[in-house]
Length: 286
Image (cartoon, rainbow, N blue to C red; front, side, top):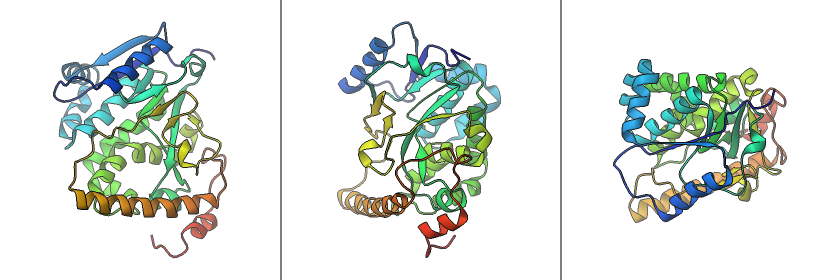
């Protein structure tokens, strides 16, 4: 069936009004120029609150209860695309081509990177993760519904998020709690735990998932510029230590992932066996 995803682009900003950077304004203009005929919707803080109140009153209390702005941003992007359909893009995503040939999909998400999570790798057989900086879906898609319900579950039960934290770099557990409670970690967990739903999602895989040059791309359509404006600013020494630990763990995970080859598939098509998972981490306890 053609035309599953409507010609619609959704972007927003939550928080105090600020003047967008020149880079963000260029990326936003580029989205519109490359996709003529697409409806463009931008939500400011007031519009976001009004939308949640009108369309999802059952989630208003949960939305307000998130501790960080980025968690509310994550949650809203899922709600907006679930209700309206179309494509969501972070403000720092720069496209190189239009989106028309993705309209026939039911739902599309990008491959982001290999992951750090022992739970995803060992328990769910998924050594990579999906990005949430850009995605598209038809209205009411069940995968987005599952993501939304997991966001609510994670907010009400922090213990449910805890298994995903195994393997996270030290010193920045707070960042990884966000990633695993509403961000890419949660999206990836939802994907891995629901193989039937996963088959309805088109993942934009690169040829080689272990090549860092292929990370944070929206397939062949664009690139996430990774301004990371949501991350907490840290002192110089702590940031250096954090970067060192993160880079060291990342290199180990890349080495582990190379044992599985360059390409990846949906979990239900090519699951990683328990034996293969143990081979990846033979000395690490659960």
